[in-house]
Length: 276
Picture (cartoon, rainbow, N blue to C red):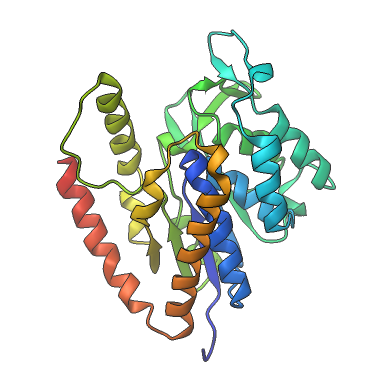
């Protein structure tokens, strides 16, 4: 590719589905496409920071599978603000980072969090990164809000589940990766089904304003088969993400990426049609 553009990568939240981000990153890098800036929300924030710290992809999978997955009985607490904690994620980052500061990450990194006090999102890119990364992944009720100073923060996906705009001035092209594809659903047999659908539609709505800032967009339906807490299926999710990354790499390297660009407006329209 002549005059190879500089790419920025916007990673959405999605719980265990966010493991697909690791596979996509690996496939892109194997094809000589490395991001010059990265943003992440929730699980996307964890992957973005792990990438910035230079953690190898296979090691990321190992850490997530064996160390960072949330559901272990020893982590359960009975506090009213959350059932599980993310202490192991903190220990992992502390082990790999020379110091707790965005400046140690190898490329500009942007973490989205939800300010619970003000009810809005914030994008953090300076100062200490560990607490904000944990806050970004703190799904309400499952995890306690993260208090930083006098402010309480929770999952960034509630208010901005994919941050693309912030990357524009740092790169030539932005690749958005959204792992919460919503397909048409005809059956709602349980109250749980309705609650889950409503939650994911609300989170989906937070990316609408960001789509216009993506030059390329991955929103693979195949990832939707996995649930938010399917961390025991990390390898399968990674492999699907890797395959999606190979497809994207081929399009970028053969200068056929305009096909993906055209899909953005189709996706935007389909989202609007579904939630109105």
